[in-house]
Image (cartoon, rainbow, N blue to C red; front, side, top):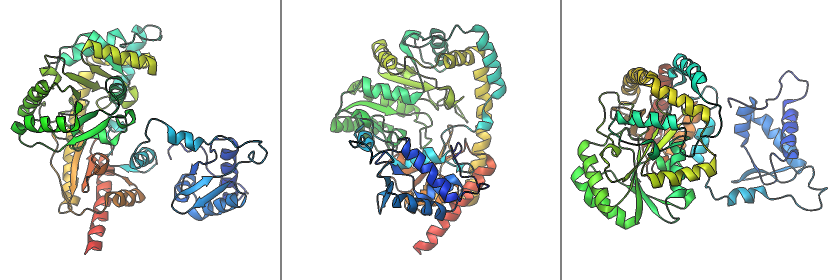
Length: 487
């Protein structure tokens, strides 16, 4: 891992397996690994500690002999005792039961693996949904921080809707692409995901449903499901004139309360909703009285031409909740996004935000305000589009070189992603594991659509050109080997 808290000392006179035993005993004794805790697999710990798997196996065997851990086929190795249990008058709390009883569902297991593997040194991240650290505007950020320090007030709590100066800046910024929004209709949030979380717990009753494109980024998260909301996927509607009938059918079939959509540079497909489709969608949702969540975090990352006007820019009836963010265009670590919508909705979500974290970071809000008002954000977007164009062309060249005959794809017009369809498609879970052993981290399509069997989300935004080519080369080799086994 990138920030491993401990590794055995190969220069010590103490055998490595003994050091590992001492480390695990400490975790158990301090209650960090409580009774019932599932210990990471031997292979994972061996990689983390930088030792042979047999060394971890020996450590596990001695800990099991001491009665601290127990391994069972199919369920892994768990802590069954600690150094205080035999002395205690009563059993300790069963923290595993508490964890499993929590209202918020755990992430998909593959998403958990992805989140962990992203920080393993040397891993080639072929699907990561953020820009490369090489593209971070360090000099501009230094200038922004210097200016911010001169103008910001003491860093107290901001008002419920967020820093007024930032909301003014967002109001002016979104006018550039046709959205009219007063500062009172804007809520500052800590990224788009927090916006979705507030909507899920603040606007919808348990048991309701939302419609979404199939596949969808939303399927890779548990934010709505944890709030008791059902996700109902709509297969691609290729003819815009069919939107009214299909939307009406799915809305009534699932008794849907909202529609979630990413019209510009969709995640994961990269597609752009056409002008005609946007018109039809707005008319249909107005007719069906179906509110829309428009996720537009990629909208400014156009590479060939600007996409059609956003749904919010067409909204005259307060139908659309619009989500924007600086995470994809500037920095995910800044944790600044916004929701634009009818004022009663914004006030409701602001109240939830105050109950949740009492407001996004004041420092981040002042920094974001300076970016948007100084003119530097526009300059930055111009540079980023140029770099992404270069990376896209590189990615398409590499895919043609290694994946021709193994997959097909369409050139994206913006955003980060190529939606790769495998012509030789081993089980995606097996391909994911095989690639990870080869040091390549994939985003399989089934995390965006549980029924997907042959797609991968490939990002050209994160890995360096050299890493991208090496990752695709290794992926192609795995697919060729899978094809040979099928013959």
